[in-house]
Length: 615
Image 1 (cartoon, rainbow, N blue to C red):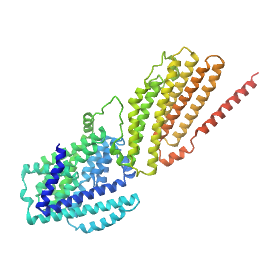
Image 2 (image 1 turned 135 degrees about the vertical axis):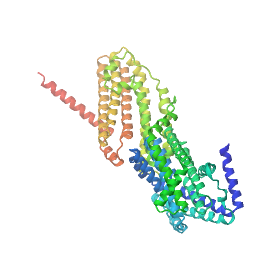
Image 3 (image 1 turned 180 degrees about the vertical axis):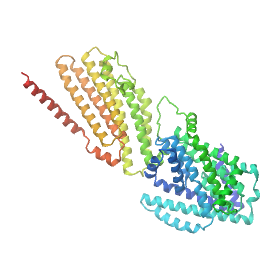
Image 4 (image 1 turned 90 degrees about the horizontal axis):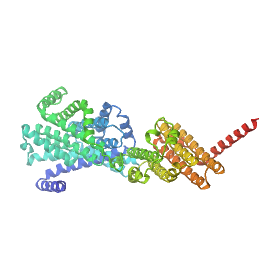
């Protein structure tokens, strides 16, 4: 209810302000232009997040200090802590960085955002920046009409900077004009009462505008025009710092528990930093005065002193919170617990991941890995084994021979619990992916979609195989029981060997190793089919049993082929060009058939030669 009333209330206040004062109109227009510039600047930088920024982020988060440095530098360059926060939440939700690394980036972004105050106080108010705004807007708009994605990105950045400069100019002019009609400094409130009141106003203004940069520029321009006192400006800056957490909180709403943990860390950091600034306000003011004198800042240059204060209390917050990162991570993991549902849910797919191309692909890959792991559990249990048996050193053939009875798994229910919902979510996620993705990224998403189809087909083939497996595998017909034991042991051996191959992080070698598995499985199927005729001639099985066994060997071969095909896409993590080169030397079905025939003929010839040589 309150949320619905907020927008009309803001409109009414603005309309009343426009009616009462044209100077108020210029200030608010300046804020609006500045915010539009921030949006344009953010959109421009998003254009360059199609790989470069993501790769830098991934490589810059191995240590907490690296994460902190990335947050400081990226926010200083892009002048958008919002973009850095959303990008970090997206990567954390995708599982690409740790929670500790994400917290480090957020801490750094808070310090990086102070550079905006320095730029406005040191340059924006001392130079007629509106003169630079017009050329930037002209060149920026021209570039926006170009077809090149890069040129459009540059256009948005230039236009964004132009609007930022223009917004600062109008805010400055509006506050200067206020002097003739009203002096807002008359409403200044000294002491702690004013400190808490103006901190609250700073929080509210930042929540409404969703930009601490905009709030700080408004504070600095009002301070430069002597419309607010230095003491109240400090309180407003503290409030802006606390209010900026709203961006991370909103961004985390579409994220998973990890994203919510990061938003919680952002809120804790800014609240602690704000509390420190309020409690030690007098000591900080004295420290700022001393630093200002040391760096040659004039005693009455309150705008630059405000920038110093903003930097100092954020730096102090980092120094206090850095040693507490590990306890903070532990606390957040206890507060935001991953809920285990009866029906398995996607772990990595979030709407925020769709904002960044590389994240989109990596999230889809991780979720496909999730569904692959669930499918392995269904296949293993559907064949009468347990995961710990398959992924250990036990001899699978011995386990099969000693089983008194093969237990039945309800594969339909298992599929509904562990596969169906995730598969549907992956299809929906990939369909929502930005159409402006690069060709190689689109191809990777389509390959992942195909991998999911292979996984689903493998599970369905287990269901088809299970009917005869339970009947003949639990029967008294030794030949059929032995044949079906061999079928399931062959599949489970493949799963074990796949796991061993995929545990080794190599590139083309993995694909060639997978080709070897294809050949082994094809040879196993050919051997079973040839053995069927022998068993029928010997009277060990009937022709109808032989037909069932041949059909089920085809299902077994399909299961193996689908698992290998899925693994090729999910786990081969080399660069696209290397992947394509490796794939070009892999075996297709015709080549597999030819190799199997050649191997069979060679074996037959060796056997014949050995017979002739025997006296």
